[in-house]
Length: 149
Image 1 (tube, rainbow, N blue to C red):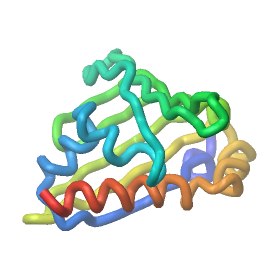
Image 2: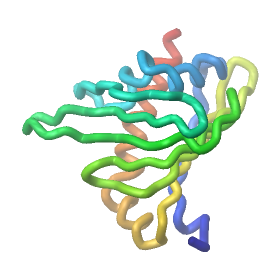
Image 3: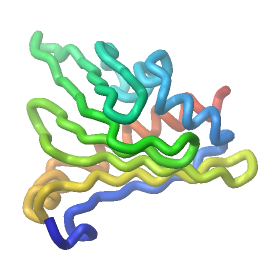
Image 4: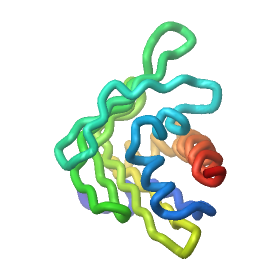
């Protein structure tokens, strides 16, 4: 589990939205369903217990009738600063850790999102499978959501 930097993929964005609006989009089920899935896809929150030790589970029905399941357990929450969670994205990704950092800059919010993988090889594989495109698309939807409020 060494080489943290080489096992981590990170995206940074600055949203033209206050910290509370961005935080709420990450922590409230009714907001999460509006941006977590790719454009044109439906997302259902089947579980969301936003507290340390609480579980979350989001389900996206696929056109072929299968389901893409995102789930994890909250490991650390510092209100309006940091969310750390385990995460599995079945059937594609398992045993990763999500770290979302929030930093207020006046009416803007600097957002840093990192995914820590168990090995360097797995990290590289996830990057090649489209990590930046996939999460980048979700964060574009998040940006559209928070910047219109």
